[in-house]
Length: 224
Image (cartoon, rainbow, N blue to C red; front, side, top):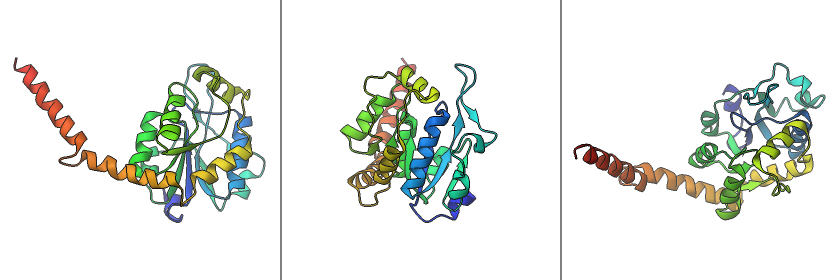
């Protein structure tokens, strides 16, 4: 968090792909080049795919073996690559201006609560549906323009891991630039949604009232 404290407000792109999100070396290289060419500051939670099927990703012991040669040196003044990261705490930090995520629902909710625009990059499970809802239906995020509509979640996860499907660096760069556009309609909508989310949980808000009614009904049913 010390590194984030030293960055300007809203200047950092945070990349984190959830507890099971990891890419093969080929895709990592494309992301790295796209980030570098975008010119934006970044914090990247980078994890390695499991060596045994069905196990979760783990932290890298040495980033030099997975990132492009010289990448860490070239981006030392504007970027930080780490392992596991406290996602919500980072999203809540004022220096964060955009979030690149796999699009899990918890991640989307945290991003909206914090008022941080999200670039939805689905990898598995229901995340392509989440992308459609957030990006194309509600206009609360952006996406990497990529033809993955004919791939199911399992195939997409395996393709990203073994290098069979790569999102190229130019598309990553363009998507990050769109995400970090300070005057975009997406950013305006996300800020408005963040305010709405907070209103719903305050005394008198819809979520506050619904939870209160649920508790009342629960206790009433126990007395019957």
